[in-house]
Length: 426
Length: 74
Image 1: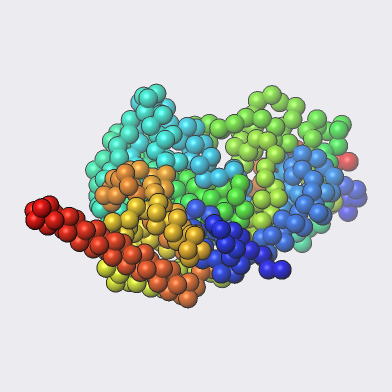
Image 2 (image 1 turned 60 degrees about the vertical axis):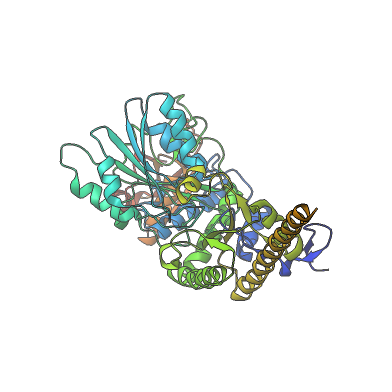
C-alpha cells in the first residue's frame, strides 16, 4: 500500500501531496540521507570521540566526514573550524551570547528571524547596544546603511543571508567588503555573522571570498539532513579566547582536566554530538555537492519565477518582496484580499493537499518591514524536489480561493445593498 | 632503519581523524589506537606510526595544522 496521510477527513497518497514548506524544513529528503542514518544506527552505533575502540573511531569518522562536507560546501579553511550543534538557533545563541559583553554594539537588520532578535533583545537588557538597520519594504538592504550604523564599539554585524518571510537575499559579501574597506586601523573591523538558515545549500556561499567570519547554518533545510543538525563555521579572524562556549562538559579530550578545552571544535561541542543526524547531514550535503549549488539555484529560480508570475496574474492576490527570482530564494509570501492567511492555509491543506506556512513565521520585524504585521502572509517555500506541475496545481488552487473570496464579497455587497434598499422603501 | 612504533598524541578524536586523512594522502601508514594509559590519562585515541616515519609524519601534520601534544615510542 502506498504511503499516505490524512490532512483532514480524507486520505491523500503522499505522492499527491504538494509540499511547499521547505523554508521550515525540507521534504522529501534524498534517499541517501535515510540510508546513511540507518547504516549508522545498525552498523556503527558507538559514541564518536569517547572511546578508542574501532567502532568509536568509525563513529568519530562519520562526524569528521560531516565536518569535511560542510567545509567543502562553504569553502571553510579547515574542517576543524566546523562546529556542530542542534540547529541554527543554538549556533546563533552561541555566537551572540558567547561573544557580546555589556557596552558592545551590534548592527543587525529589520528582517531578522527571532533566532537573532530574541537573544539580542535579552542581551540589550544586560547592556549590549543594538542598532536595527531598516530594510526597504521589499526586504532589500543597502550596505551603506550598515556602514553608517557602525560605531567605535561595534563588534558584530549580524545579518540574515535571506529573509525567511519574503526570501530577499541580503548583500552580505558587499557589506563585508565595504565594512572592511572603510574602517581605519587600529579599530578592528567588526565580525560579520551570517545566518544562512534559508540559503545554505540553495544559494552559493564561500565564507572566505564573501568575508563571512561566523557562518551559521541549519542542516535540515536546503542541506537536506535531518532535524537536530546545524552549526557554525568559525573564520580565522575570530578570537576564540573571547568567544565563550554556550555549554561546558565532556568532550572526550583532556579528560584529566576539569577546565573546558580551548581548541576547536571541542571547546564548543560538549556532550555527545548527534552522530546519527550528522551521518544523514553528510549524505545530504554530498547530494547537494553532486547536483551543484548553482544548478539547484537555477532550477529553483525558474520555479520561483513561474510561481511569482502566476500569483501576480490572479486578481485579489498581493505578492511581497522584490518579485525578482534572481534577488531572492524560492520563498514567496503573498496574501489574498478578503481572506485571512490562516483560512487560506487551512483550505489549501484540506481541499488541495498543499502544505504551506501562514502567519508571522517567527519574524515579526520582517513583517513590519514589508507591511504585513500583525496579520502575516501565506508563504510558499519551494525546494529542490518541487516541480513546475506542482506550481501550476498550486496556482489553480489559489485562483479558486481568490475567486471564492471575490464572489463572497460581491454577494455580501449585494445583500447589504438590498437590505439598505428595503429599509429605505419600508 | 629504526624499528617499532611511536604514538603521536593530538588534541582530540577530530584532530586524530584529520591527521589520519593527511597521512594517508601522503602515503604514510598509521592507525588510530586508544591512548596507552602509561602515556596519558586521556580517554581518546592517538595516532600510531612507524618510528622510521616520524620525521615525515610530523612534517605532514605541521603542514595541515594538526597540533601535537607529544610523541612517544611504544
